[in-house]
Image (cartoon, rainbow, N blue to C red; front, side, top):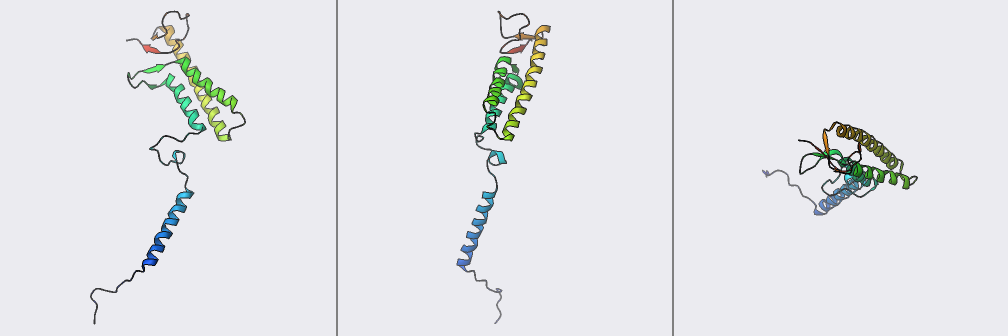
Length: 160
């Protein structure tokens, strides 16, 4: 008697459920080992998790926006507002003072480095704006009442 179908394999359903449970345990253990969230390169669909570095980034982005780092989405022109940029930089400096001794070394270094970079950008942009105003290449949005040589406080627009 020859069997043309080949040998029969009998699968024990209890063994199958044990194997599935073991597979699920291993997957859960592996997932628990891996860091999750945006910091770990995880799910980037949602907003970032609130933490000290995100607060610093938010204030720094505001300062950079007013330093002309990003064009205005509506007009496509870069807007320079030295006073609002300085305000955001000063907020970061205040945070550095108020949190001294309460930050991790990484947080402290991140804040110090960010402040240094923003201050350097501010000095560079301030000098460029003052020179452009002096040469008449830009038009002040500050209007009348500004002292001679005073850098415009909010917006600068290029002359057509």
